[in-house]
Length: 165
Image (cartoon, rainbow, N blue to C red; front, side, top):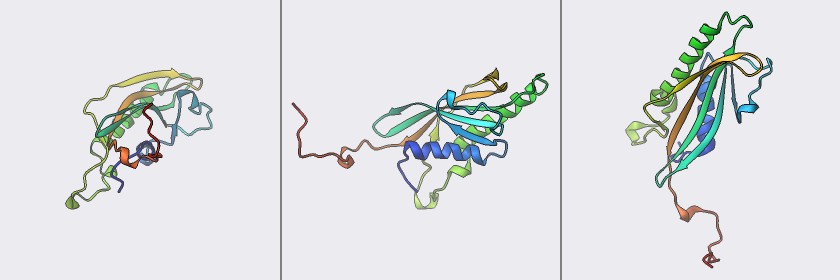
């Protein structure tokens, strides 16, 4: 297991959690405008956006915005059901990040520890009738913390040049 996780490791883990959830049909990433709004995508859909990253001496925090959405009938007859189901799916994702064994590919007996951490509180915001194809769901900002070492010894740089001018 890789001790120090990268952005790619973290994003792929988040995408894997969505793909393994039996109520999510499609997982996409990128800017908000990159969500496939054609009805060609299978719904419910989870979309992950990277907001930013915080770098500290011993950790990095990747700040993601996660949307979970589903199609609402034109007459809005299933909107309450969509809101309920997508809310439950979002809380499932949070539970997996906080306590899910799917993330724990480590041997505690050998002294290994989990490598992804999240804060305790989350704000989940609803949206309704969003985009052109009438989807509703929930959005949540999720910060995933990973261990990091700011080690200048391993940087691929030519140290034969002094850069102080």
